Amino acid sequence: MDMNAFKYLLAGSLLLAGCAQLPKPAQPEPAEPVAQAAPEPKVEPAPVLPSIELSRELLYEMLLTEFASQRGHTTLAMEGSTDLAQKTRDPRLAKRAAQLTLQSGDMNRSIEAFRFWQEVDPQAVVAPRLLASMLLRGGKLDEARVELLKVIEDDPTQADKLFMQLYPVLSAYPEPVAALKLARELAQACANVAESHWLVAQLAQKNGDEALALNEVRQARQIAPDWDMAVMLEALLLRKPEPQQGLELLKQYLGSHPQAREVRMQYARSLLEQAQYKPAREEFRTLLKENPDNVQLAFAVALISIQMKEPQGAEGQLKQALTLAGKDQDAIEYFLGQLAEAADKPGQALPHYREVKGGEYRFTAQMRAVSLLEKLGDSKQAREYLQTIKPENNQQRAQLVLTEAQQLGREQKFAQAYEVLQRGLEVLPHQTELLYEAAMMADKLGKYEASEQLLRKLIKVKPDHAHAYNALGYSLLERNVRTSEALALVEKALQLAPGDAAIMDSVGWGYYRAGRLDDSVAMLRRALGENPDPEIAAHLGEVLWAKGDREAATKLWRDSFKAHPDSLPLQAVMKRFLP
Image (cartoon, rainbow, N blue to C red; front, side):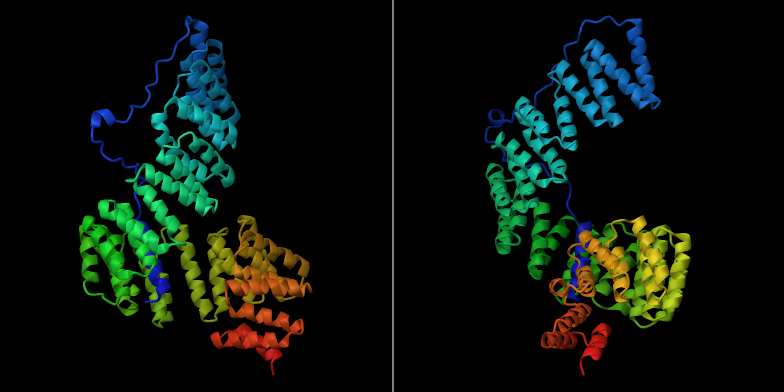
């Protein structure tokens, strides 16, 4: 089986087998439970209430505010509750005003309301937490830091939970450097809290500071040596610089913590990454023994066995897991088809897929059957079978149209493919993949105006569609028309997808059309370094030839031709320039 196909199938199965929610740090059992018991969280005292008579006017305002809230009059409810809170300075009304302003979505007024709540009820535990959360969402990190330090100082016993709650907020913050700075400042106040170091390590990794991340997670492990999440993060950080050390770390931890399921899952995956298939299979088998009805784990074991050319028992084990998991016959047939396909036995996979008559895998199985029929050389039957598939939603409907058009395209039936796509767009006029494919097909047919209209519509529907800009720009460059506009389009595409080799190729070709030969060579070399595609080699060779370096151009073309003798762009350029 092809290694990339193996990794793709296995990654998909393991993703579904994936991790549970992040566990709480495990603490070693104390020798003297009473003496060493963790302090209880601080109990919030009852608020001090003002001595105010409940007048008719006050009761009327309270009822009016609540009616407004219940009937969706958000602004009226917010303003009424705020007015009541300020008039009475009652902590209960201040809390209600804060809640209603938060529901309104008015960030600034919410912050004011929560500050007022804190003012009239300094002992309210929830107020500073919610205020800090709003300040973080509003990008006011300095103010948030003040409130968070108050929370930590007020109840240090809950600091561990606070740092874990901060992780999803700060990891998603749009300015990662600022988020890391805040985490480090907060961690200084909690140097003995493992979660504080773990949070800093996570954010440091996101910032690319692997050394800081490793140092911090090791501090977390010193404080909480039995914490699964800390050892998993340390092993993850070691994956690139010291992969074997990372594996050994996980192995040692499992020796003393054999029930750490998520650690074992990471260890098994890491072994796979290092192509250590036999021990990886053993780890997955251990996980499978604990979870015999986990289909994805059974599928992973079966795939690894096939990769090791030891398929004995793989099918039976998978069937057993499917049965234990309560899967119906349709699901069993689907996974058996997957297993046969992974073993590169399309003839055996096809009947399994065709037996899937319903359930969650029906559409996927039918599409795989279409693909296998074409792979087995029966394009006619593949297209006929495709016509029998009934889509359940627009996504499936679009996929059917694309598949039929691509089949016709592979048979060089571009006009028919274009007609199929046009019919699909009549039903789904804004479907981005159909717009793009139709534009490409129109360009092949020389319908340049239609292609441009489709691509401009696609850009309007999805303004960040890099390949739409690239396709339009490259089409103009190939025809050597509106060169300045074309170059601007492909440069915009590169801004949207800076690592895309095909777009780099377009930009390099645009520089060539604009007469910027040195820039063209630099960009095309960069593109070829990312992807040794023969079309990029054809372009780079032509630019080198134009610069007078015919020897380098010839060598590049011939080297690329050895690796890609069927490349039409390469054949065409060599025919034009070489005798």
